[in-house]
Image 1 (cartoon, rainbow, N blue to C red):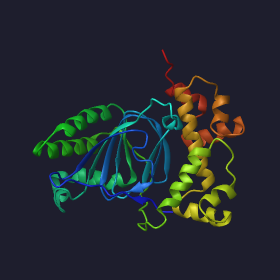
Image 2: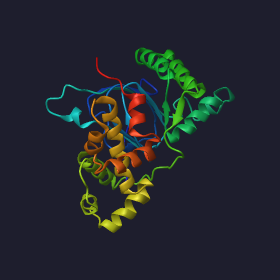
Image 3: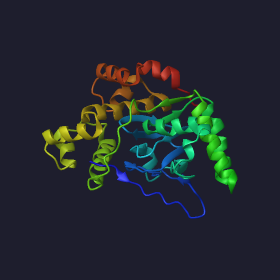
Image 4: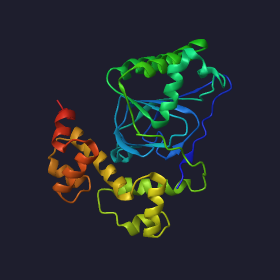
Amino acid sequence: MKPHLLKVSIEPETSFNIRLNKGANFYNQWHFHPEIELIYIHQGRGTRFIGNNVSRFDANELMLIGSNLDHMWRCDPEYFRKDSTLTAEVTVIYFHRSFLGDRFFDSPELATINNLLEKAKRGIKLTGGARFELRDLIAQLVKATGTLKIVLLLTILEKIANTQEKEFVNAMYHPVDFEEDEANRLNRIFHHTLTNFQRTIPLEEIAGIANLTPKAFCRYFKSKTRKTYYNFLLEVRVAHACNLLVSKDNTIYSVCYESGFNNISNFNRYFKKITGKTPFTYRREHYVADD
């Protein structure tokens, strides 16, 4: 089980890459790349996988993903329905740490940015009002040319480094094993799980997706993801429950069963274990009713 190495093309006339992506599949394969990634989600919601973290993503999310940190974005199932009018829209900036020279960020004046790029290997999420100021700077960067492009990127990185409105996605950095020959295996496991998490997934079934015996699959999955498959499945279900609690006016009881849990006691226990809050508290803090 290895992530896919995404090869980011950078045009000769520029030193870093800016992409404006629209559609549910803005990158729903587990992947990594040596470039540092700054991504702003204008529209879209779903589940994201960054390192060993599984969480919800929503519109107005801004993330800084460090070099070779494995990740994947998966929009919710309703985005993929034939009659769906939903779409995701993101701005992604890719740049090498050495895009201005191998030693550029080693200069004393850039120590805070240098430290930021190292910490970004754990994944950084911007919170609060800082992300909206940074969103506006990113919009300027998209249209900029010449020297102004570099000035704006450095300004964005400095503001991220200096703001207190950010949090780490992972507790520590786990470097990716760069062998690529098994890239499809984990993607098969992820996609099968995300398609079927609302029902019971027997161990024999998911092990078969990976072409392993159940016992070998358990060892394999934990050694590569640093968690058991059962815990991973719980995180996917809780992430889906978070979405239902925020976006639908339904009972916590119905959210429990729609998220793949078979009783309310287990749902409450695992939801609080993963999010630190009860489903009721989470809904009260996040739910916004339709007009």
